[in-house]
Length: 148
Image 1: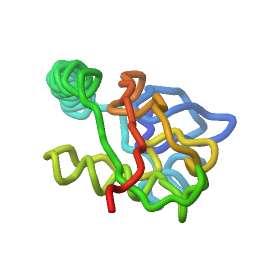
Image 2: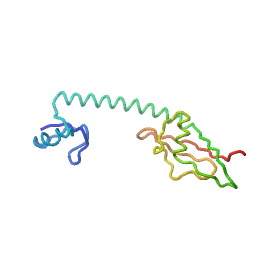
Image 3: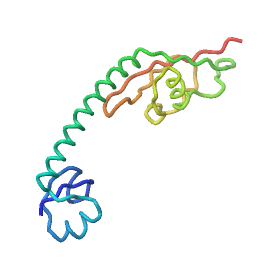
Image 4: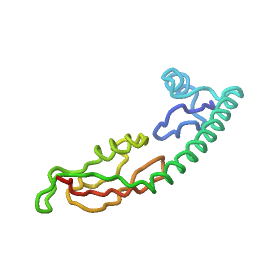
């Protein structure tokens, strides 16, 4: 029996694939658990339309992400921190970078900011940020001493 998988299933295939399985497996397990649907002409056409829509949506998201990446590459975030004899009080974390980006209008979660460890020294640091699947930007971060 031909079916279309609705989920990734080990040893069978990935989501959206049309595969051949035994009728008992399809009727007793895959279809009732909504892991697959029967591969009728209507269902196959629906799948193709859905794939086309996803492709178009992906291209639109990709274009938007490239524009955001170009803008972010030009951004410079400045943090003014208290320090004593070159030692900084506290640190700059992915969360504080995310909050600063949010103030500038970029909604980027802290898990997409690649910071191996918090920044604990004054100076300039470049930080990589994930925007979309394989699109990244690099933000310059300047940490300076607060004027008293």
